[in-house]
Image 1 (cartoon, helix red, strand yellow):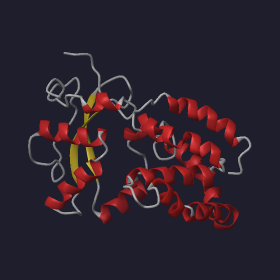
Image 2 (image 1 turned 60 degrees about the vertical axis):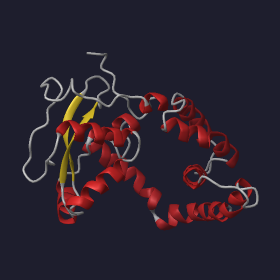
Image 3 (image 1 turned 180 degrees about the horizontal axis):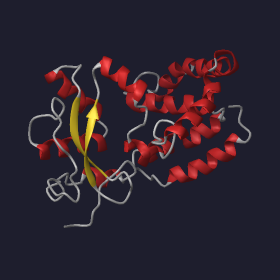
Image 4 (image 1 turned 30 degrees about the vertical axis):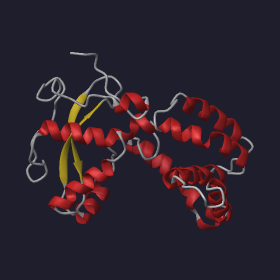
Length: 245
């Protein structure tokens, strides 16, 4: 068997695209495969195909479309279980059941009683508020962040900056399209503006800083020079010392 390499969020884009997506050596091998059948949840069909196609959709960023296509066939309020191959601990490859809740009543009930998060985002976001699997850690982070969403104390200061940036969008589009004469990649444009809004409004970074780092940060999350994210963390730390966020 080849070295146990499994691409992840920060893997180089070319390696992701050229990855073989074949998991014959792992499926039905008790060292790796810990899946089991769950009545009314496990999807019928070839587990190998499901595991490989689902992982590919996650890695290449269209898993939301992948799930939507499944639900379109069986019903949008159906809960399902898929086999997911991962390396969440950055050491061992495993295949586990991954349950996706779509029925609103089930989602409401489960969210009230079972708040621990799945570990699928820890590789990307470490122990942030949306990825930590420690309930006490989540509780402390949530309490700290509550202040950021108070209408008068926080949001009233953020919205004017956000609105000003939004008003500049038409001029930005005009410049990028050379006075509306050339095509524009709107997906990239919206991603750029989302990052700009975060840096300018939420963190209070200067426009010069966000222009210098915007695309580099987005590329890093795509696996293009992902090492820059470490540099950005340091740069952002120094920038925030004199920011207005």
